[in-house]
Length: 118
Image (cartoon, rainbow, N blue to C red):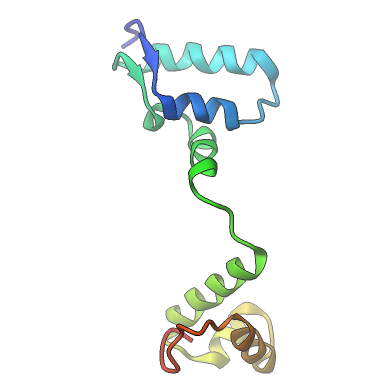
């Protein structure tokens, strides 16, 4: 533990650049110091970073989705978890069944099969 670190991977540098650094330079200095003490490898990689930094690294490579896309994805997961039971899904979501039907109708794509996840 605590071997000299010779470099940071390109992904780690991108994560550093994407992170907002609310603690300013002191936060960066403390993180670099902690990483050099806790990492045995000569190069710091994404898995070596704390979880909040790993998210910063992903934010550039994983595009954000719209709220409507997130909502549709969430509804699909709920429906799958209850075996397609719309009444139960609506209950879990805290909406009435009619509202759920409307949300499903709005979120359907031409590729959706009538008997698919919806």
